[in-house]
Amino acid sequence: QVQLVESGGGLVQPGGSLRLSCAASGSLFSINDMGWYRQAPGKERELVARITSGGTTNYADFVNGRFTISRDNAKNTVYLQMNSLKPEDTAVYYCKADGMLFSRSYFSKWGQGIQVTVSS
Image (cartoon, rainbow, N blue to C red; front, side, top):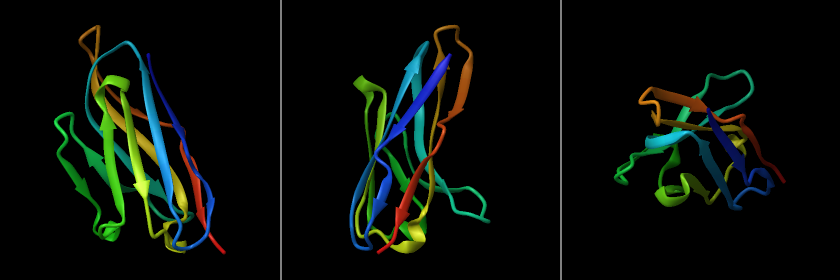
């Protein structure tokens, strides 16, 4: 009933930039929190950044001002602008959305994940 489609990943050199997008679709009544998480090989999935419907954001410490999360509520889309990328940012990045369906049931949905590789 809810689909999340991520785009924008790929290979980038250290110091470069990428912009990830995640579009939600389906029987959506409202979306509360949207966020980005990542999982590197052999490590647990971790929060990168999240944003509420009102625009309040929070970031993981490792972001250190390099990434910016934003959302377009009209398009049900969340973005992650990543600058000054480092090799340690290499991971599969996952979008997550929480909200309510038209049936008034709550949902919590993960995207399929998108690879980001930072390498020279």
